[in-house]
Length: 222
Image (tube, rainbow, N blue to C red; front, side, top):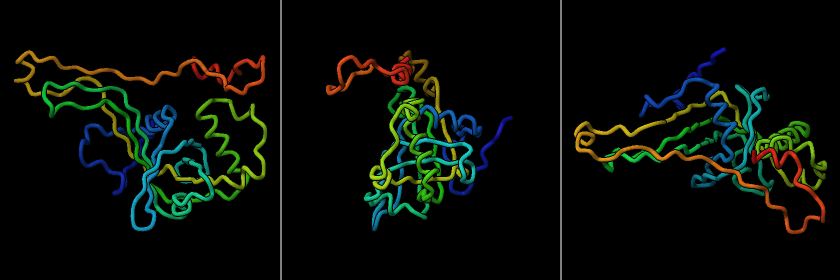
């Protein structure tokens, strides 16, 4: 069933509304494809925007599902995020657009903005679930192959949850949008598709002899 995202005053797209994407399934597809999110939060007297690994639980306990990020319990940005409104952005670059004028150069992209009140995950089971999701977002199935986290590791790691209810998405694809006179002048226009490539795994230098690349890692590159 098609589900349309309902914009709020904070997520309503006012410029470039022709690029707006309304379908929630497209938002979730972008969040599934992307590997890096940027979290914006006020820290003291200035804003900070930091890249972070993330994962999504569409059936999570927050309104609209849950986006999880993690960090050190000592990280100031994470402490300052608790119980405050944060902004998470996710972007995938899909191409470079070569227009027939400087004004009409652009990029093909998919981009999402999620705004919500962040909470620090206190429940131990939810925190472990979130960390497993983040690992599996990078390498699907990886968390099930790992040893359990130690108490020390868990005590040093904090998880932040952001609701997915308030979000917007924009996307651009295809050719440049040029002036008719520039097209008629015979200037070349087009776009350069761009994609992420995962290369063959490289073994750590301190691996014990005879250890093969595990299937979960191998499958990530296929």
